Image (cartoon, rainbow, N blue to C red; front, side):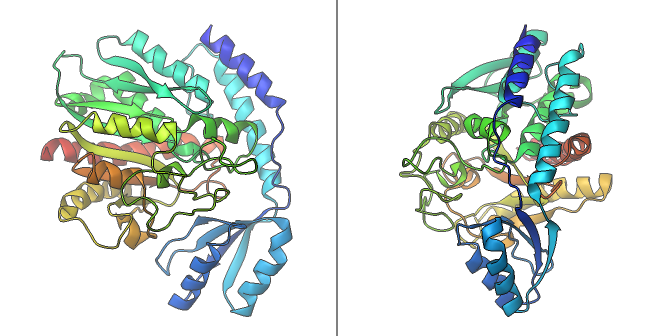
Length: 418
């Protein structure tokens, strides 16, 4: 029955209109000095440009999406200052349509199989993800439970899954993982699902991670935005609660009440980084807040999955200053980076959010550390695929498997320390 429902959902989704992104270009920009980097930082405040990645390091290129009407002026400005750039995608719309068709085909193949509601050969819709959580709770009732933590603005069930070793002991320390605060970062949702799969369905190999810790995982923080990226606007980032008649949504990762709105967040309601009308204005961030605060004393490791950029970031996001215990967090993050480098050769950059990328207040990682008192709080930015946020379905398995290597190493370090 669950698969039949998902099939109906899939087929209905095919007919829905999608913002086409025809003629949108993706640029990679290489900066050679601090002036050029500062120029890009100033350009990133222009709401017409969507900067996918804006690293602080001069060695790493920045990536930006520009719509057709702005491209001539954008290229002219870069040329005026002799800034080196290349065009990664001449027409994003073409590749997105192909990727949408491929994903639908892969989902159909999975729905016709006899396996679970999800696979790691497709990006799955919110209803399919919730169905998978329920399947696991039914299959492993002594070790897995699922709760409806609350509802999104559009009344979708937001579910958490708790995975234990089934010994019945209560009050254990907790590792809390979430994904999908930003809607368009599909590989993050897939990464969370792979962690769930490993802990629940590959329990024997990972029992040590559950001996003294329970895991609580929220795989889709922002289901309204996530569904919107499937049915309408692929690069949508925010929630979906209306702000004005023309502007929808808040950047949930600027909406937490810890130095809220001080830096790196916009007051303009149409902006991708809109901080919200108030802190915790969104039901989704209120829900996550309550989950984190409810684990006070037990919560030892908060890990939030994003994409993209190959980063392991920790507080603070609102200032370049470091917390007094930063070395403890850095040790955990470095363990994850080293494990991934050893397993696949992929390099992750480790450091505080502000010092590696840019200052941005109101993030969930700062809140988990500064208010909910998780001693280890890390944002993991998974690798880029496609033009950044749109890995192909063929990349999912390798990306999530690699991510699990790092998460497992970090979790092991946390279980040793706490």
